[in-house]
Length: 170
Image (cartoon, rainbow, N blue to C red):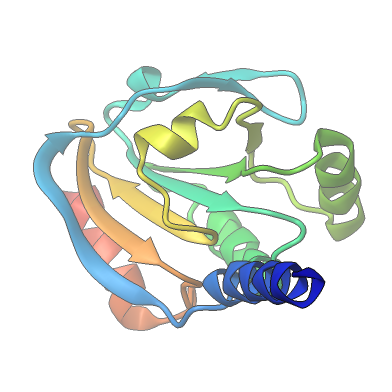
């Protein structure tokens, strides 16, 4: 019995770790469906409401400090955020199932300037039907969910950047 419980626990841990390190899969989001709205505070205490971001393409990126692929991806996302400041785009990262104090320390040490929001009850993650982290959603200027990326995104990939620019130009 003890071996069976240990085996089950080990299997669960392996599955959880494996879900964090998946290769990216680009899926069409539910085209023409309104993105689930949210109102969350960031690491500076500022409240972000998705409904207030219409007129901008919004990237909503779920991540966690405990997720190795997330930690590898975030510097490229920060670089992309910095390079796109003059465009009609907003990048919001949402710490998913993570300790806010650990997130704040991690962000401070990394020197990131993009907004890092907290989803304390994981309601926003549930509303977006997350399969794990990292997971990213592209929302157009009209608030419609246009893209869903499961797994880490290569933010320096020209195809991805071009696709986002097409949404900005619409």
